[in-house]
Image 1 (cartoon, one colour):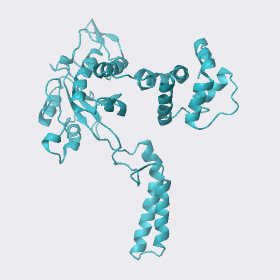
Image 2 (cartoon, helix red, strand yellow; image 1 turned 180 degrees about the vertical axis):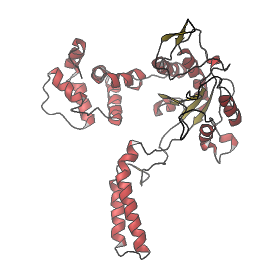
Image 3 (cartoon, rainbow, N blue to C red; image 1 turned 180 degrees about the horizontal axis):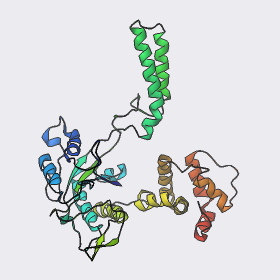
Image 4 (cartoon, rainbow, N blue to C red; image 1 turned 90 degrees about the horizontal axis):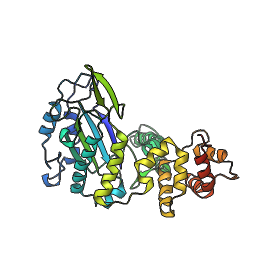
Length: 359
């Protein structure tokens, strides 16, 4: 489960948040184009399964009382279940709508305020999408970019030869194009992967538009707060403020697991991902003690996300600091992960407990 929370984007040529939610709502309607009404996905809220785009726009745009020009008027929450999680619930939109409504209860509970915040205080509209496309900043697109440029150059040459503008061997140029396509690291159905292509597999995710103000248009509820819990003085009175993202993210996983009886492996948890970023050594220590079935799942995940390789990399430093002698360290990331699991388990546990490893 991956969840992101981002504020309304600033309008072009403007450092304020005066723009309407209209563009974002229209963007989320793109998958409905050309589909029969029965096959379309509609906006929904805590009670209604079908909310018109006109209502979404008017309700979000009209709920901005006393917000300053530099205040975001709404936030975007994107909930992206993993392929394994989607498979567990048969990729069922009804289940995802139910889960979203339960999830928003956890969202409300993560605010730190003088009074208890509930989902009834939150004004939001959500929409399910089933497709994702590759963007220019995706790693696979970037890796293919040099090949794509060379192919474009060769295709331009080929076209000029075919139109008599240049002299050359068209078969030779075509062979070079085919070679570039073959050498490109990422392809879909034999075609070089480029920006705009649809991603394979189950890509279902949920977009949630949340108003900055509560349903009464009175209180500001910002999930972008820098504080989990903070108390300030306003008009001589103490006032609680803050939003605990970690609490929200962990609660979202527990909510999914409880509702759908999902058995979450350690590597799939928010706690594991957070630990990997903050303390990779401790992460490896925990993973090394996992049962073999979870260990192999972890290795596959590490292969996808990549082990840290800055300087000598965390794993290399781990060898040095524990004093363990491994004469030949493999460069392949999966092999390196296996070495970490199988050869450093005992020494790693002791080193972490004694606090002697500092990366």
